[in-house]
Length: 577
Image 1: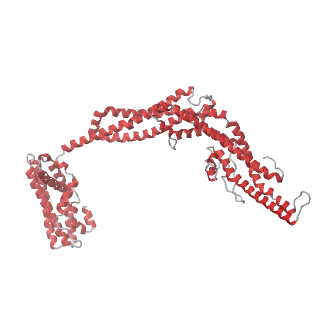
Image 2 (image 1 turned 45 degrees about the vertical axis):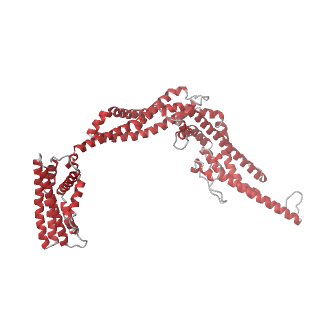
Image 3 (image 1 turned 90 degrees about the horizontal axis):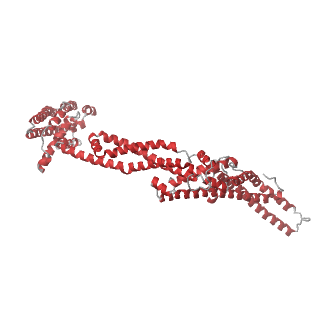
C-alpha cells in the first residue's frame, strides 16, 4: 500500500485508485478471455480439419460438431481443454495472487461477501451475477471471479457510498457559504469561516473506509497485473494452444470409449441373460444353432473382442488426459507453430488408441444394430413354429385348459337356485343337496360319454369309466347323509358332513387316475368333427377337466358345497380348504 497523502487529497486519491483497480481487473479478464478464445479457435480448427477421420473412425457427422450443448462431444472436449490447459494457469494465478480476504458485513450496512481464501461463491461467478456484474466481466477463472466478486460487492459499495456522502457534503458546504455571504459573514483573507471549515474537516472521515478497502485490494491487483503480464501474453498463449490437438483427440477417444463401455455393459448383460433363456429351451436352441450359428458365434466373438479392447485402452491412453501429461507435452517441446495437428512423436500412440476405440465402437454398433436383432427375430420365429407343432401334436384332452374346465363345472353347479341373503341352515342344505345332485348327473353323463368314444382304447375308456364310477360311489353316500341333515339341521353335524365331503372327493387320488385315463383316450381331431360335434365334445371335455381338478383338490368340498361353507364357522371351512 502507498503512504497516505494529505487529508484533503484523500478523496481524489481514492477515486484514482478505485479507477486503476477497476481497469486492472478489466484488463485481466480481457486477457483471460483472450486465452479462452484462443483455445476455442484452435479446438474448432482441429476438430473441423479432422472431420473425415472422425467420420471414418466413429461415424461422426458435421452436425455432431455443431452441437455444443451439455453432454455433447464438443462440450466434453471443450471442458477437457479448459480443465487441463487453462486449469493449471488458474492454479498458478491462485498461488501467486491468491483469493481476496473478503469483508464481513459491517456496521455501515455493507453487503456481506464470501469468507476467506477460496470462498465457495467466488469460484463459479454466481456471486458476480447476483452483484449485477455484466456477463462480459465474468470468466471461467475462479481467481478472477473471487477478486471481481470482492470488488463488485464490497469495494464498489464502500466507494460509492463515500462518493454520495461527499457530494452531499459539497452541497452542504456551498449552501453554508451562500447563506453566510447573505448574512455578511466573511472570513479573513482566503480562509474559510468556522462553519465551512468544520464541514470541510468532515470530508477525510467520509473517505477513510474507502481508503482501507482500496489499500487492502491494491497489493492483490498489483500481483494480478504482474501475473497477467508474465503469463497471459501471446507467447504463452501460443505455447498452450499447441497442446490442443493432443488433448482434443484424447477427449474424443475418452468420450466414445465411455459411451461404448456403457453400451457394452448393457449389451453384455442382456446377451448373457437372453442366451441363458434360449439355451433353456433345448429344441429352440438347437434350431437356432442350425440356422444362425455363424451370427451367434460372431456375437460371442465381438463381445469377447470388445472386452479385450476395454482392457487394452488403459495401456494406450497415456497422453493428453491428465494435468501431468499435458504439462509434459508442453514442456517437452511441442511445436508452437503446429496448432492444427498431432505432434509427430505422438502419431503412433494416438493411432493405437484411436484404433482400439474405433474398433470397440464399430463392433458394438454391429452387434446392437444388426446381429442381436436378427437373433431375436429368428428365435421368435422358431418359437412360433415350435408352438404350432406342439399345438398340432396335443390331443383334445391335453388342449383343454384347467381354468376353462373349472369355469365349466362351476357354471353347471350354479344351476342350483342361489341361497337368499337371509336364508337359514335348512335352505343352505337344500341348495347344497341340489348341487351334489348336479355333480352326480355330470359324472354320470361323462361316464356314458367315455364308454361311447372308447373304440380301440377300451382299456383307457374302461379305466375312465371306472374312475367316474368311483366318484359316483363317493357322491351317493354324501347325498344320503345330507337327507338325514335335512330332518334335523344343526351346525355341528353340518360341519362333520363338510369335512367328510372334502375327504371323500379330494383325498382319494381320483383326480390323477381320471387325468391318466382321459389322456389315453383316442379322440378324433377337431378338424374331423362337424361344428356341432366339436361344440358338444368341448362342453363334455370341459366338464371332465373341471371334475379332474375338483377331484385333485383338498378343497373340493368348498366348490361343491359353497353355500354351506359360507355359513359354517371359518375354522371348519379352513380345515378342508
